[in-house]
Amino acid sequence: MNLMLLPIFVMSLFSLIEFLFPDQRRMNNQLFKLAFFIVYSIIAVKYYYGPDIRLYVPLYDKIESPWDIFLNGTVVGSNVEIGFVFFCSIFKWLGFSFWFFTFTITSIYFLAIYKLFNKLDKYKTFALFALVVFEANILFFEYRQSLSVAFYIFSILAYFDKKYSRFILFSILSILFHKSAILVCLLTFTMLFLPTITYSKKYYILLLICLVTCIFFSIGDIATLLTKILPFNSGAIFSIKHHLTIEKNIQVVLFTYIIGIYSLYYYGKERNYKRYYALMLSFILFIAIFYKYWFFLGRFRSCFMPLIIVFVIKEITDNQYKSVFLKQLLVLSVYTYCFFYTRGVFLSNENSATKVLNATTIFTLKDESEEQIKAKNIKLANKYFDTEYLKNHIKDTN
Image 1: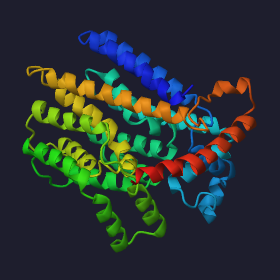
Image 2: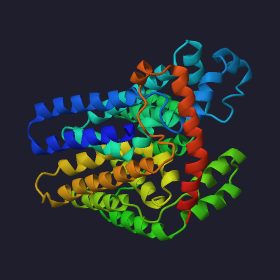
Image 3: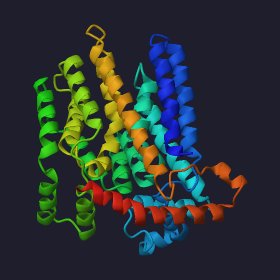
């Protein structure tokens, strides 16, 4: 069974129940908690799962002790962010298994999501459904980025509570766990603490124009040119170029983006100098500009997608007096994207020789030993990367 699709299937059913009884607040809060626990449990029990273990398992197995890293640096984790290196090292030094290590990462991420989604008064379950659809990769595979996103969300929550020293601390932690957070945190600090422009509804027209224009305009060429001008190291240049060579001009998610922007324009209230509002619109602009570079965008989108989900739901549900047509259309677009996305994931795994997305959970230990599972799954992950991942990405550059 494809484990990656299970939480999406569960959440599609739970969110439909929420829409059938929108005014039953107590029931919907209980529904959200139940759905949250189920999704968290499905993801937390994954065991040596997915293609990215080819990188993380050897790192965890061979990582030096925290004291050695502090004194001499690291050889094993030389290409990995120092925050994640120390995180691995501490867990390994304490004697925890790789599963408990990944379980802890999942728990930290879901704690951040739970605290964030509690800012919503309605449609928390639909918000969770949207998250598991848009951010399935980070839930299952991307351990460094998962921690980075969690710390970034904690920083935004600290800003809400006016705890600015905590905001700075969590921002620094986010950067230490994934370098992509540098740009996100820099943008966040600029929009939240420096003078910002006042946005009007005309700004949404700019968003739509940018989104459509950047489908045909090569932002990637400009960004690649900047890597030759700016003082990036060779590793950063290689990473940027690799991410920007993978593009798709038209994706199913385009319709959801367009409907989302237009719904905000139609339902959104006029804001006068509200910093969080300005930050969210800046994030959406970033999505519009780098829309077709889905791999590059994914590195940054994960940080602010949970915030955008909360932002869009709050903005649209706050207005109860206009036509519900656009709200329904936006929800339908998310379900439509979900259908095409899950279909694509299902078919890609079915047509895969490795079946790298098939379920391997902690309960698999009743049939096989840890070493057997680890050896088998790493072999499949390496084979997937060498024979399928590179081949598929070459196709995507056409």
